[in-house]
Image 1 (cartoon, rainbow, N blue to C red):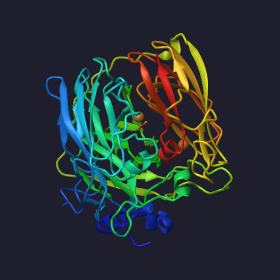
Image 2: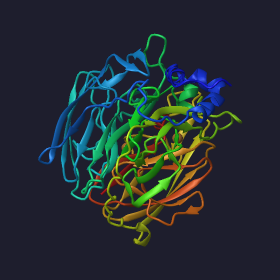
Image 3: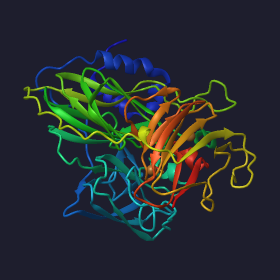
Image 4: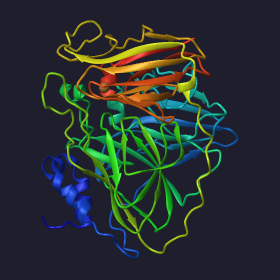
Length: 493
Ligand code: C2O
Ligand code: CU
Ligand code: CU
């Protein structure tokens, strides 16, 4: 195959991945392998990575309005009509410190209800807090207020709508943004990048495409894979520079198996979990909703941030049929490192060892079974012919409380997946410590707020139900599955 130029590669990246993926998996592989290291300061050719505005708390408080509306934006080089917050795609990045108050006025200029969830933040689920039972009707607003505890874990979090039945549609259409909780002691880096990965599908007119019932059941994967709304943007650095990448998987259903060959990667955190020391990694798997906090030490040359194929299983009763269209290797970004070398950045400050819930007294053990089964279109379903998506045999109902937990206790939950498809399990408010993943015991403290439960697999977590009481939810973060019922209500009291 003729080697393709970077410009062609970028064009391909912008043309919708469906076509390239269908016949072109080999093309992307060859792209990655034909891109040769470039010396000196080569002129930029592709669109430079753009970033959303950053809003920072001052004197312990950040107050802002998020206006959700349909508007015009350029997505992956095409004129599109996504939904967005404050007419920016992604929404503004919110930077907070532990102990801060975040006050958000959400204004709904959509033609359907919406609301707001602060994914991963350890804040109260009650009242005007992280309360997903609030619905904000079209034309109205709602004042949210979240108080972060003084010992809130630093890291990367995000916000998105959570109105049951419309979550996947609204996120797929563009409603999301990043939240950063700053470290007590800054890590020396040359620059920090907030990288929101999303996918969507545009119709010919640039509207967000609707999804078929089959697409919902599988979990939709969009034809356009976007990084901050762009296809294959260009990131540049000088050799020796250390960058900090805050990567968020904001895709409705797509898993991101990321690779950046030729560069030195160190993972310093996933979700609210921190690595004690930076952990060298070759590859990262982010289920929908997961975030990575990554240090990249730049080495001269040009690398491609790739999303590799990940097999998340099949639909029950449909042998061999994978859920998503994306089966090839996709280019998410180009990372070009050239120019004069810089002196290495200073050491990463040591972090306090996290608490280990393996030593905690367990007050209750539970099993939560995630299942997909033939639907009858029965009560609560309302979708004749659709498959049922259940937790412990039941579809979501906000009128029911499924799990009651005593405040202040530690519980151990075994998450069982009886379906042939992965389900990334997410719990609001309280982070989970992963103890065992499909038979493999973990020997270090791994905190997650989204734990992928493999097809026909299981995982065990422990949760400390501290600091807050109230009703909240757990669900599959394949957001179509959540919308179809794979969600339960928890009350801590
Ligand atoms: Cu990212 Cu319940 O959500
Ligand atoms: Cu969440
Ligand atoms: Cu699922």
